[in-house]
Amino acid sequence: MARASKNGFRGTLRGTAAAMAVAWTCGPGMAATLDITGVAAGTELYDAIAGGSLLREQTAEDATPSTQELLAAAQADYARLLAVLYDQGYFAAVIKITVDGVDAASIAPVAPPKQIDKAVIAVEPGKKFSFAKAEIKPIAQGTELPEGFATGQTASLGVLKDTVSAGIEGWRDQGHAKAALTRQQLTARVPDSTISAALLLDPGPRLRFGALTIKGESAVRRNRIQKIAGLPVGQVYSQEQLDLAATRLRRTGAFNAVAMIEADEIVAPDVLPITAQITDAPQRRLGFGAELSSLEGLTLSSFWLHRNLLGGAESLRIEGEVKGIGGNSGGTDYRLSARLSRPATFNADTNFYALAEIEQLDEVNYFSRQLDLEAGIERIASAERTYSLGVGLRIGETRDAFGTNNYTLLTLPLSAEHDYRDNRLDAKDGYYARATVTPFLAVSGSASGARSYLDLRAYKTFGTARPVTFALRGQLGSVYGPDLAEAPADYLFYSGGGGTVRGQSYQTLGVDLGGGNTVGGRSFVGLSAEARVAVRDNIGVVAFADAGYIGAEEFYDGSGQWHSGAGLGLRYATGIGPIRFDVAVPTSGPETEDNFQVYIGIGQSF
Image (cartoon, rainbow, N blue to C red; front, top):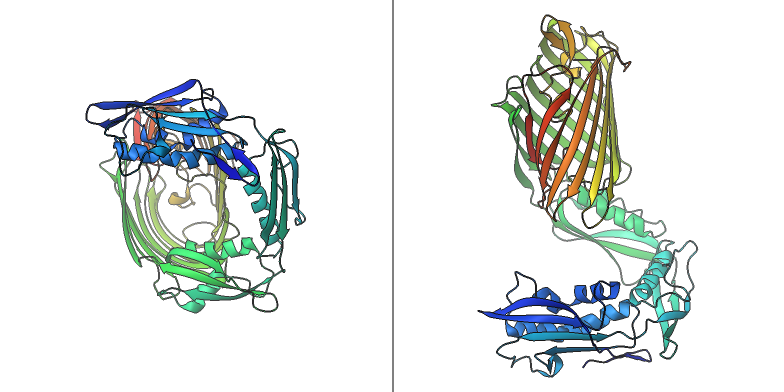
């Protein structure tokens, strides 16, 4: 039997009625059972005890522990389960764990029994304790304490810990980096099942950031590390600013590990030095990717990345892609690009980039070759919000139903991205929005104008046992300025395929000129909806419906044409995102030769 004493109270646990039995394997041909008694199955307390038991883990179907391992688990469970009970507010109780009727605590670990047939965790929780007094002082203005830290609420050990943490963080948020708990008085009255808690904090002095010291070998120059971190030296200490400095260093990709360490001693009178402990990531990286569609064929991609090209955490990414291999969506497409990014060019949250890209698109309704040269800045306003502004030169040659066109454009690409998804590859909640506007000045071959595109996505999950996630997506595109015949063919919009309407042939919907000739439209609308149901931990099914609209007009007015598709899919969760398998059929719109389409990839469709 195990007993515990802390701050004037004592806990004992003892059990009566059996509540659970689980089988484990002790050796070849040997099976044993585990009973948890004294607590009703299905209650919150029962689930907490079962979840906190090491014996419970050792009884999993695929576990094959030895008797020595089982005995060690039983002896460790005394302390583990006592902590669970304290966290649930039970401070006067007894735990007794037996193996084949013998108290596990009395068996020498070096002399375990040769066989174990039955183990019992007997629990008598006693009465649940509540707070007779809940006081913490002083607290900083605006500090939000846990709701459970109040008179009459359950006296949970976890609530006490969270209250202390909240009190300290409240002071740290106002610059008191050395705030600490200096005294705690916990008094238990067993007859009343109450605890009186009085906590005293010492805020310490209000501090300012001192100089940032770099520790660790790095190929990135020290002055560049300090500039990228952007620690506001001399300003009032802020945990948010300290975390942000670490985030800035990590997002460069140049470092495997970053830790911001506060000095133990304050430099008179109110300066707190900070040390950045860093470890470099491998400077070079090579990657490959593949995606398969029954219509669009096989897509292969590869990239080479240098994370510290010039010693200032500059990244150079060279990427190539071949698309449409063996497909039925035109010919084979090629793309080769190089992008140089330099973090903290103008300030800690503004990066510079330069891009060069050559692309050939052999599509169903047009052919194009283009060269893009672009340079600009990227502003990272927060972890969720990013904005960019660039200046570019685009030179292209296109062939479509209107003939061959050679054009040269000066461009001003603008973009804004808000990403509040909980997981980019498999979102369950949140939303995503990306807007791009590219005004262009025609040097030759076109009229001046602007191309815009908006992508909105929203996610909401219901339930816990078998959660259902509803996902919605809306797309809106427009080409303003040049007439349909003058607009660059690769700036126009089509609908159909994996990125727009599944079940419809790739780019099957455009503007019909008659005589079997089709070109892209100047306006585009895309709508998608999915219901994602988790069948098991790593398997899910999806039902979806997509619709798309293409019009010859600059902005949607309904004079164009819609088409749609729907289908079912399977998802298999992996560490890098779900593997996606979708089968879709067309449901409305112009008739197509194909009855269904198959899509395979990694990550959700949107």
